[in-house]
Amino acid sequence: MAGLLQALVGASEKAAHIARLCRREEPLFQLLVAEKTGADRNRRFLQDFKTLADVLIQEVIKHDLGKEFPELQGHIHGEESNEFKNGQGETVAVRVCATPGDTAALLLSVLEPERAAAELLAAAVHRDVALEDVELAGVALSIPPQDLAIWIDPIDSTNEYIGGREDVAPVDGIAPAGLRSALVLIGAYDRETGCPVLGVINEPFFRRDPLTRRYRHRLGGHGRIPAPKGGGKPGEPGDGVRAQGPRPRRWQGRYHWGVAYGDTRLCSLSPPPPRPVPCVVLSRAEGGAVRAALGPLCGDRLRFAAGAGYKMLCVILGLADSYVLSEGSTFAWDACAPHAILRALGGGVVALAGALRERRAGDTGSPPELVYNRPVEGAVGAKRWANRGGLVAYAHPQHLEAVLAALAAVPGL
Image (tube, rainbow, N blue to C red; front, side, top):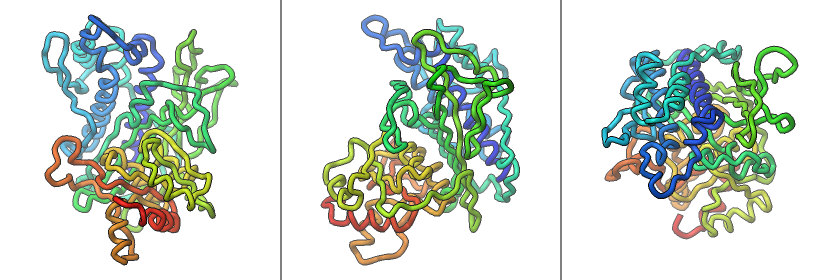
């Protein structure tokens, strides 16, 4: 499992590089943000380039993990379908080919006539990722990969990624919106029990240099940036180029990982200290009844953010004590990786509706945690993997209990 953990982190770093590349290189950036109207809307890939970025990252992760761990092949799941129709009406299955040239040719069949974009993406797909993380390299675990399966969210909070707002001011460390909330999520769960056991969260857009507005070179000279805590890599060789004109600025990323298997709890982060008055993060779409119920518990410490993965990351980092969602609008790929890290830190993610049913029935035991191997009975498509009935992500059990007590009187939950 130690080798698998390193492979997941490496895959997340390659995914983060591709996500940054699409916002940094002009041939890709113009496709990413283009809003075509009229006849231009019929240029096939332009309407879906943002989806192609998602799909390509997903397929890269599947390819790299499946190649290194053949026993995982067929058990690596993602949010996106890999099929596109090109301008000639032909169906193209996006995949990683044997060589960069072959991958570029396949991508060009979707992106025609944007050859430069196809070649940039193909080069990123086939680049090697070298991890320089002593803590990660020292992790020693033993679990057969054939007992595990993987959920991938290639770019969580895709709308924020496409919108690309770079200067959204944080509130107590929590970014309400913007690029900061776009994450790469890779989680492993036990095939038999569905319990999340390993998670990696990569923040491709963790921070940028606010003064020079350049993405500093990672190696050598006075521009070196020390690695962030939590195992994050501060940059990548070759990224030390000043952004030109109004183009988006150079970003640096970081990653976090956690393992919760049997009695083993390991994490790149330390457990956050609990607050006497909990801070709860919500979606801006959360209903008034839930907000009103949590108000007396939190006072002025209700916060709002985009992206399910990012809101769970806020709990992991101690920026919030809990994330509450009353709707079934998240999916297995959103929650698996953060859930594993929260378990490694002593927290978890529970099914809100099920937990409230148990509390109302007088059961004060541990509420049911989400699992990732059971599709919703009778549902089709993506809805098969929805976290129906909402969820509560928490770092400390006492905050979970306080949140459930506050929500128990809300009708309809």
